[in-house]
Length: 400
Image (cartoon, rainbow, N blue to C red; front, side):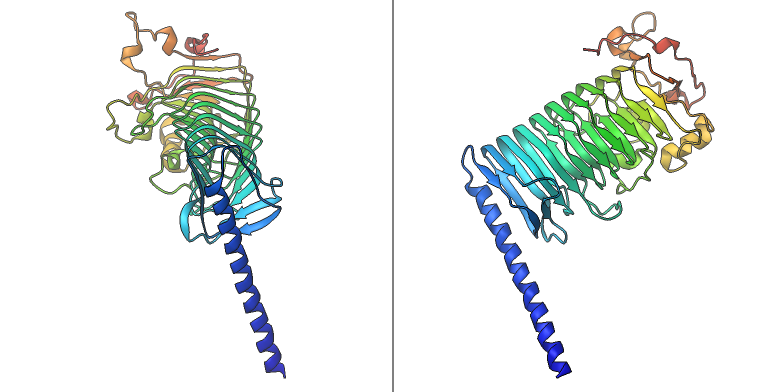
């Protein structure tokens, strides 16, 4: 009788698992069919619950579509154990798409990717990899690329092995009221034009907020980026990006890092307890990667950093990675690391006849609370590091 009972229980459990798998597969099929058959103006609603998906969902060549759950943490699309595709949801070649009130978890690659979309809104969306930060996690949480008119509002990103909230090669961007933690990069704006990033919180990432221009991309030059009224604190998480990724070079303890981009204004932020770099301004040469893209511009220009609040506990910067080695053997700041670091590498073409940087290309630093600064003189192997901020106390033409 005992053996028969065990057999019956096992059969029941096995049957339940098969039934649940079939039910989840049917749910995925129905949702994908709705995405395929959607007509202009449709609202695709997803009920409350946790739904397991084994393959990517896709929406292509649609207009004026809303994908709506019952609330963040109420409608959960889980891709744990995903076997087909990389993204959780991929949206391509579309106009006026809104995703709201849902969570996407544990995708093999990026959680939600939108490409070539004009009018992309993410509102009250969570993207996350559950468990501890891991290099096997997908690269990007929210990932609009080559898009125009992007809005990311009241979203949360957790656990990305590259960037939790990323906007790349796009134009007309607003990122606001959002939270990013336990990512390599909390928020990243890359090779993008006309971006406002404000009222966000980035904490416990490797780097809180990155504004990058990189080579070998379709949209070559970003700029006109404003980062303001954000809380960027305690971004001291060890870097867990896979080797070879550019963000694998970001030192743990980075608040804001500006890399080789132009016309960037950083103001009215709280930049607190980031142990290595409060705000860094660097050229692409600091990555030590070769530049093969002849149309790429590797220098940061027109940078304005003003009216921010800096605070940092006394202690040493990271000793990990290439930047950690620089802190240890070249920079030698000890426990008194300046909040604002500039590599000091300047494009000779931006200089006037007197050897001064022309106004539109200047690095300007002004009116920051607890302000401290160092020009690293990286072009000369850090031989003449200077903490004199006076040459950089100017009004940048990048300020709107």
